Amino acid sequence: MSGGFFRGTSADQDTRFSNKQAKLLRSQKFAPELEYLVRLLSFLCHSFRLLYK
Image 1 (cartoon, helix red, strand yellow):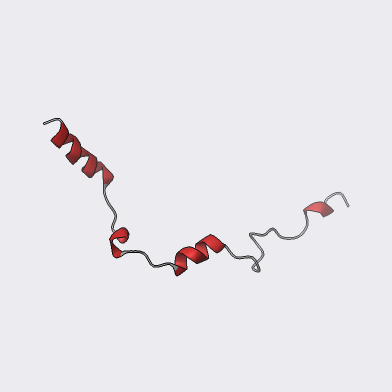
Image 2: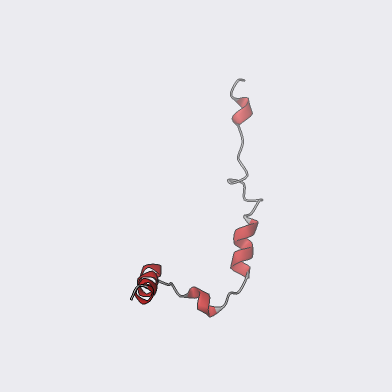
């Protein structure tokens, strides 16, 4: 009986409880501009070149 406390499933394993934040993100629509990836390193290098020219 000492291991009886740890029996059962956690909330992550139970399908009755869903991840509400993930569900909300899937239902929202975002601007198409936010889908593009920006290479931050090239942006910073270009900015530093302009600054220290």
